[in-house]
Length: 162
Image 1 (cartoon, rainbow, N blue to C red):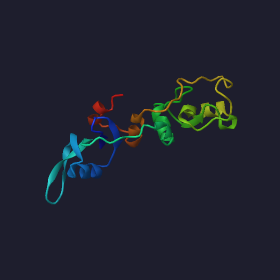
Image 2 (tube, helix red, strand yellow):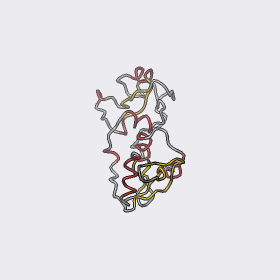
Image 3 (tube, rainbow, N blue to C red):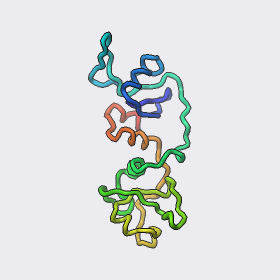
Image 4 (cartoon, rainbow, N blue to C red):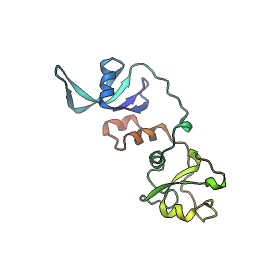
């Protein structure tokens, strides 16, 4: 379930169970519902697809400190090699290799297919005769929602407009 802040800003993805608890405790309201229902021994309720928190929650904006994972790098780079555009056999590559003082930061790691990664090796892209299709950057918060839920339900799309 997509969780929106009180300001309708997407902040998280949670389980159906967590969403129902937030709804039952009146800490959230249902914005979008699924076509089917949830049943208990004594009641029936619509299954939430999108919930909105009633009270505003301050979300830290230090995305540069969010953990760098392969899936997050691939999602940020649209599951595409940043050197040749291939969409299979992906690995991650340090643009400035660690052996040359490169750091493991969002601005130095890109998705790369295995052949491009081997071709580049421990060289800088220009030394290997390669160019990045775009410079790496810290991802938007929406990338982390895509990582948490790789298939984005239609009900979420209106709230994930970047």
